[in-house]
Image (cartoon, rainbow, N blue to C red):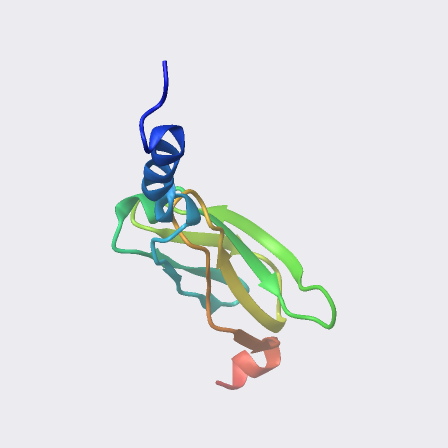
Length: 122
């Protein structure tokens, strides 16, 4: 039996059209960060609820060369995350939401803390 004019190659093209964007992590996400005495917390936000809950979040400390992972957390159903007290008192920090499934990864703004002395004066 002979395949038709478009045969197998036509079927592959059609399947490729449906597998495209969904496999590439195309749903936008964003992440916020706040700091209070070494306790870092924030929220992962997205228009799609699947991209908010159970997302892996890494708290990173900027430094020359490779940045240092300070803590990890998993978001709650509302997208909130909290590292608890990290005992970090100086440095520049940011949070990363890992790309998962159709959800794009996200990076927060930088937060710089100067130590306990600066906090007491504020």
